[in-house]
Every structure is written in structure tokens, then in C-alpha cells.
Image 1 (cartoon, rainbow, N blue to C red):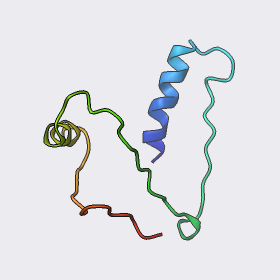
Image 2: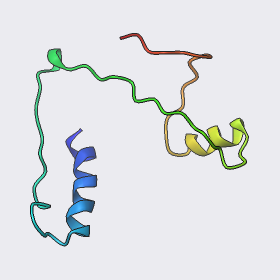
Image 3: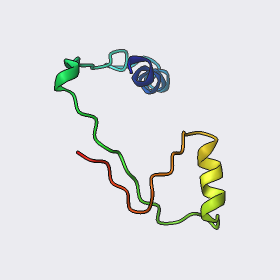
Length: 76
């Protein structure tokens, strides 16, 4: 997880050319039994002329797509 978070922080540092506090990245550590990762869902307003199949194909190139069924919501 730290490597994933460090990439955006490195981009900010590079864009700011090291100015101000951009060389520091706030982080926090929690015990695994006190951590809950919640769903991070998004709604698309416009698919820019793509069909659902075309959009899923483009997304599949970047993300792992797993069919969950219509209207699936993760249990919390």
C-alpha cells in the first residue's frame, strides 16, 4: 500500500519542484483488525459514445474486472 500511495506523492513533489512541504507525505498505520476497506464505487454520466462492452474492454486493460451481477453491493 505504501508504494501505491508514494507514486502520487512523488508526482506532487516533482510538480512543486520540492517547494514548501511537498517533500513530506503524511502516513498512518492501523492494526489489521481495526481496519475496514469500504467500497469505492463510481457512477458514469457519459460513456463518450462507447457501448457497455467497449467501455468494459477499455477498463479491463487497466483494472481487474469481476462480474458481480446486477445491482450488486458489497456487504458491510
